[in-house]
Image 1 (cartoon, helix red, strand yellow):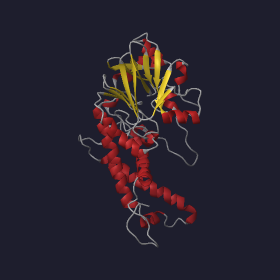
Image 2 (cartoon, one colour):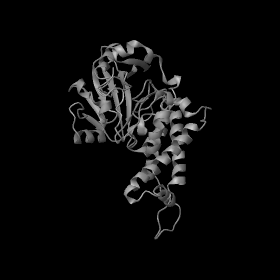
Image 3 (cartoon, helix red, strand yellow):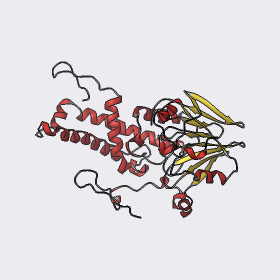
Image 4 (cartoon, one colour):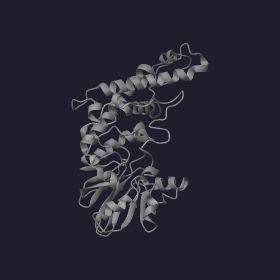
Length: 353
């Protein structure tokens, strides 16, 4: 089905060109689980898998995920993404007649909890303090305020079934928590690792890139056998997280190289040469995009730890790395050291502009 503007809206003069599939690497096979080729997945609108003793992962054709855990005395649901919506009830009913008694908000973003109102007023909602503050500040009838919140750590125990909640600081956004099922060894951490891929554009639109990097290490500190990442087509393994961490550290390494090579005062002036002061921002775009291109070339041509390049190893490497490169480079310029600063006049040591 083609929409009102066809298969692509082409800008009249400025904007993005249409991406052409033949110019990009196909997704590796490990990114393509069997259920995405099953017509019933699209007919039903959901697919579930049990990850361990009553803990279930549920995904949708849109790539949005949630989870639920059966306790014998009610189901605990983690997140309520609108593209999955009421199909979460169908997934629960396919294995149990337990009612939903608790809902956990991973974080405040509406793409992950924007269907929460469907559970009704009797369901207890647990979230981080910051999530409640943000939802109170920006009200949404589809995202009811949490009924219980915590600051650092909390345990939700129902009928002897336990989930451990933890907050380790801002990463994808402030208030984004870890949900750990210790008996099942399943970890839910949303919008950090998209198993089998490089994650969506701009580090999945994360707000704190230093925290985003730290979250990969924090995920690996858990002894998990399965990860619910919130996106894409399958649940994750430790190997998926290790691969994602390696990819992001390559991007950062080459971002640091680009900044050192191109982000000096003299080099920056070269990008403005011949443009005149009225077009200095055009020069600035060339300056930024040149560094991005350097990062992309170095990252995607590198042979990684398993002998493959990133396009061979992770889905989305060729279309999305340019967005990640920009985001990581800018985070280095805003969240990390500039290695010095301008002394009086025009002299002084090397520093990042």
